[in-house]
Amino acid sequence: DSIFHKNQRKVFGLLEHPALPPTLAAPIATYKLFLSGKSGVGKTSLVASLAGTPVSPGHHETLGIEVTTVYWPAKPWDSSRPVIFQLQFWD
Image (cartoon, rainbow, N blue to C red; front, side, top):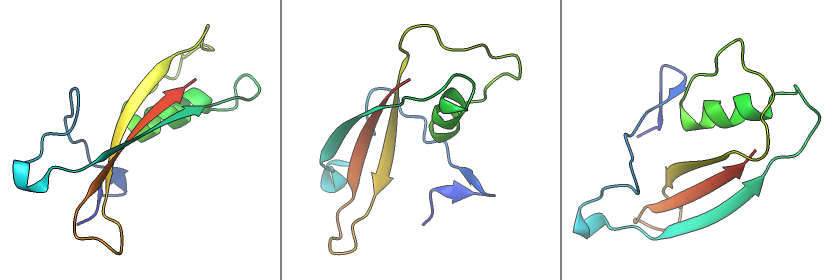
């Protein structure tokens, strides 16, 4: 199965962490990703796109740091068990 539907990432409706049945309980690998770059290049739009949330056309530059957490499920080639990546984007 793909996490994309009609060329857009499927929304999984995750609140605190992915809800998986106990038989599929997956390890969670947490990464903090700091985004740095010039103003107006699209860092916030990139994070919003990965999180599956829209960015308003009138969005202004981010003041301070905004942290967005995205859970990204993956199935390694050499394993039958999924892994959940908890990606914390620091924008």
